[in-house]
Amino acid sequence: MSIVSVQGALDLLLKGTVTCHTAEDLELRILSGRPLRVKAGFDPTAPDLHLGHGVLLRKMAQFQKLGHTVIFLIGDFTGMIGDPTGKKTTRPPLSREEIEENAETYKTQVFNILDPDLTEIRFNSEWLAPLGGEGWIRLAAKITVAQLLERNDFSKRMAASEPIALHELLYPLAQAYDSVCLKCDVEMGGNDQLFNLMRGRDLQISFGQAPQIVLTVPLLVGTDGTEKMSKSLGNYIGFTEDADSQFAKTMSISDETMWSWYLLLTDILPSQIDELKKGHPMSAKKALARDITAQFHGASVAREAEEKWIRRFSERKVEDAPTVEVCPTSDEVPLSRLLTERGMAVSRKEAERLISQGAISVDGQKISDGQAKIWLRSGDDLLVRVGKLKLQRWVVK
Image (tube, rainbow, N blue to C red; front, side):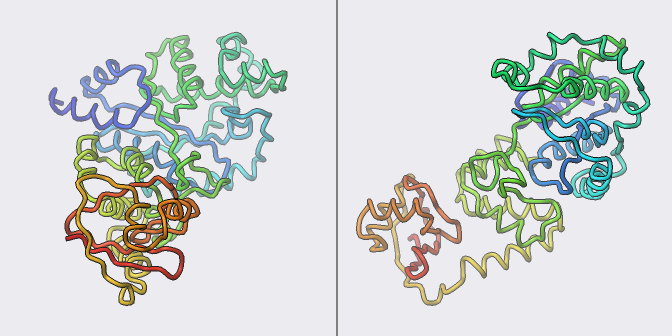
């Protein structure tokens, strides 16, 4: 691999990451020309995957495009322990039946993103279950309690006199042993997993292996634009959802969230994202929605979903909407001012209140920030809705 192509590989693999331990090691291993073994673990705690999981899966797919082997590790053993990351209380462990049922659905969903020919699906019960009492004691001797209590989750719970079950302390050790048994070159996870991932490096060294490279990625913000994507919060887009739902949910996100999704859910580099920002955000959002939907349903179905969305939200009652010619703006201006100037609100204060209440939409996108600004560019054709009755078509000339 040439130096230029190595730099291109690094740009792609490090795009959207929070930490890399270390980029120098990653470059050296890529230069070696040997296919790397890249692992990410997923505990099957729920039956469905969503775009939050997709951040890691896409990063795995990027390694595959460069010819490396990825290991989709299903934590059927560690899932029974329960990952204590971010938990204030001990999480009830899942039953073996729940684990197996959820794991089976994972095996079919991941190939929406991963190349099956370059993917190993492994279960960590393969090596953790046979350890037995003596094996666990020998493994536990390789890490100290003090090292485990350095973890923020544990230290905070200790300080607050909140209980920590002994089996929770074993979780980072079990995850680290996964890396030893799989002889990983790279392990990836969310940035909240950094402690666990680094223990894999420590344990590999104690077993005489070269320490793995650790890559962490941000937790994906959900469709609400505030909390991390979670099925329990309802702010998620699931792998198994129909194309219309995936497209519409993506179109509902804020512009700020959209740019973070571009960074984490596409192969587009930051310099290309900067170019997209110079255009109209609605066009960029439609392109993102098509890309996401096509990953799971194919390009033609994604285009059909877009057409349905346009008919439903952009063309609905458009024939009845009065057309208003407006001048382009040289920069972003308050939406509340534009609404007031065009008689859709009696005052800026009322316009801000309506926006905050979610009563305003522009081209089908609900706006909820009272201080929101938009940039009117020549050629724009926007359908602006206030509540259910007021509708205008703004043609920018």
